[in-house]
Structure formats: C-alpha cells, structure tokens
Image (cartoon, rainbow, N blue to C red):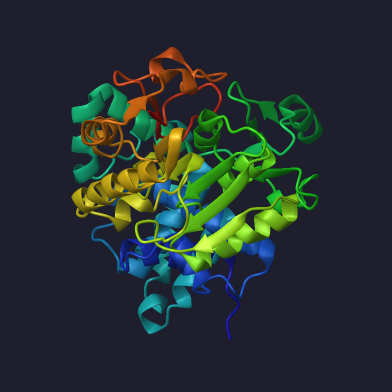
Length: 425
C-alpha cells in the first residue's frame, strides 16, 4: 500500500469538501487521516484549511497555466500545492515532487497527468509572491455575500473577506482568570476582553497547563457570552446547546451549579472530557431543549443557539462550500422557540443570555427584537454587556453586542458573534 503524505491527504480533504460537501471535521471523524502520524494529521488539516481559504487565489495563478481544467482530484492537488508555495512559502522542489507522486497514485488517469502537474507547478513557483499577495481575498458565496452587504455594506463585506483569508489564531480562557499570568507563561498575548491569544503554532495539548486543566481553547468572542451572564457562586444555571463546552467550563469555574444540556450525546463526550481535565463539575444531560422535562426556575440561562455559523468562516473556511443559504428561515424559527423555552425556565428576575456565532441579523438583532415582542416579561439588560474590552461600536441599537471578523485587525481578528442579555421581570 502506497504511503499517504500530509499533502496528498490535504488534497483529498479539499476534494471531500468541494465535491462531496462533507466538512473537514466530519471527514476527519470518519477516519480520513487515520493512516497518518499525529504530526502529519495536523499538517494535512493546516494545508487543507489554507487551500480552502485561498481557493480563488490559487485558481487565479493556475488558470493561465492550463488550457483546460483537469479532473477534480488533480485540481485539488494543484490547488493545495499552489497555496502551500505561495501562502506558506514552502520550497517548490518538495511540493512539486509530492504533488506529482500524489497524482501518480490516483491510478492510470493520474499517471498520464503527472507531466502536466510537474510543468504547471514549476511555472507556478515562478510567480512573484507580490502578485499572489495582490490578488483579492476570496469572496463569500453569493447567498451570504448579498446578505452581508445588505446588513453592513460592501466595504465591510470586503473587510470580512480579508479577515477570513487571514485565518484565525487560537484563543484560550484561563480557569483562574489570571490572564496576564497565563499569557506570560505561554509567551502569548493578553486580549482586552480577558482571553489569551497564542502567537506561535504547535500542538495545543503539549502546551504547559493543558494536562492540568489550567485553561481551555475558546474564541475570545465566544467567551463574552458567559461573561455577560455574570454568574455568582452557588447560582443554578442552565447552559442550553452546551457542547462542545467552553461556556459550561466558564460557568462552572465561576462556582455556579451548572446543568449543561445538548441534543448530541456524541458532542457531549468532549464536554465531559474537558470538565474532567479541568477538574470542574456540571450535570450533563443529552436531551432536546424544547422537550426536556427538567426543572425550571433557574437563576440564569445561557442559550448559544444553533445558527448558520457564518461568523466562524475564518476558522472554518469549508463552511461556505457546504451550504447554499437554504434552511436559514427554519433555523431562525428554531432559535425563536429556544428563546421562548429558555425564558420559561427562568425564575422571576432571572437572566437570559442569547448568543449566536452568526453574522446575519435574522439570527441576532431581529431575533431578539421579535422575542421582546412575544414575551412581555423579558427586557434588555444593556448593563450586562458593559464588559472589559468591549468596543463602543460593538453595541447595537436594540442593546445587544455584535462582533465581526474584521474587528481587532491589529490583533488577528475575532469571530463574528451576536450576544444579547435579557432579564425576566
């Protein structure tokens, strides 16, 4: 059996996204990288992510060098190779050699195209880096770009696309809240909102403090939702749609008695593992939030609702190729039902934080405005969002908070999130 390289595996991942519409995460879960050693698995995923972020740029380099588009598996190999040479600065000799070998491994159809791959990539390696850098950032798909431009304008859409192309650094939340201490130990950056941002690559699980549960991985924007809930020690808190568990860990670390509920038992496995690693406890339940027959009268409820996840494209560049805009209305209806269900589980005076990792107002600002119209007992609690590091322009007209991928350009960006803090009268 021929040896599988990280580069060849990356091309297969890209092909799985573009042709089969299977996410990178699902492909990995199905065993797509099982034949690779752990370091090569990580490398294959990095190469696939880079290729997907730079797909249109790679095509811009390749198109003038070919008379016709090659078969999809060969095209994926070429795209990964060009992205690695241009974006990552990899030495052409090794990239070209492995691309030719990967093409040959495709069988008879690939064997006859090895000469083409070799010639095209050698010519591509001569393209000046400045020309690559000058190519426009890949555009969001039409179904999403139109909605983003309607909500924020063309310049904002272009700024978000540039942020998507830059990718996403890794953020950490310290269990003890000592941001400066953790940043110092890891040689990382302390962010204004209280997260820690890594400045170098490497295996996260090998970093100091991982095994002892001193911190967990969590985007800085996502961490704001639990902070807005401002839980106190001993409070009964319900975390709806809790997996993979970053917010559950925040709430438990603050001393709350947390019930973490999620529909997916499979996703809750990771939550339980992180609770154990960090030495924290919560009651973990696999159930449908709309049909769960558990108790009400919680002091606070955190609802990180299912959504289009359009705010996480810089972290998940496969997402635009997996969706076509259908189903957003259905998701919005589910969110509305979840808000009503969450509100019904609050004790009088209880707090509800609604959050989505979406850029779409239908899954944010408009969703909350509609919820206030349906529920006379709910009111916006804007003071709950007076959090450290929150920029004034993140605040929205109805009293919520909106982050975008093009925020913090000097720090490496931020996931797109919408957060609203509500209180029951």
